[in-house]
Amino acid sequence: MKLLKTDLHIHSQFSDGQLSVAEIVDLYGARGYGAIAITDHLCERGGVIGHVSRRLNLSLTKENFPRYMETLWREKERAQKQYGMLLVPGFEITKNSFFHQRGAHVLILGTTDFIDPDQGIEEILYEAKAKNALTIAAHPFLTGDFEFQTLQLWEQRNEWQHLIDLWEVNYRHKIFDHVLNSGLPLVASSDFHRLNHFNSWKTVVHSTGTQEDFIQALREQRVELFYENSPISQIFENFCHK
Image (cartoon, rainbow, N blue to C red):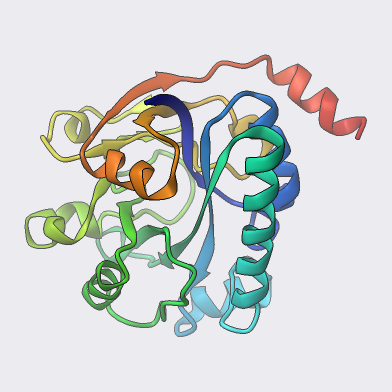
């Protein structure tokens, strides 16, 4: 059994992240992480917000989804060979709304199949579970940042918790006590978009290191939370001189 430093919520240049997938692999691999998931946004096609996100290239699309997964698979092999690190393929179904109670983001990990983001949340969750994917409620609380808020999953947790494997308990530096004390299965991740997001609450997973056992370990809550506090100036310096 290994203790794997883990971050399951990371965005690349395929949506609104600062780094390429390869750069993310090198960032986390060089710092001793045992497992990461790349989870770029997959926004709804309908509605003004979804339309704008796609026009600004802030979202995956059905057209570039195969190329995205091919990139993840290629980097998955390199991550294992070069760093002994597991890269789990994923994406973030992104349903934004001007009304906090209608917004919902769901991380879907462990499947390379496209899931239509224009479906209802319940249909999306059922489809993900049919594919045996891991489902995570992303930041299901008021984050405190100036951004779209995503309260729908939390406010309907009694109805949908059987379809959601894990609930994010943090937003980078802050732990949300009402989630921590809820009795629900938890995970901490960075929601990484930029280098200064690297330091955050994250998760240690007790696993053999295979993707199957890693996902099972998360479901069984063989986990511990920890706070990453790397010297961020060194991280910036390394990338500025690449």
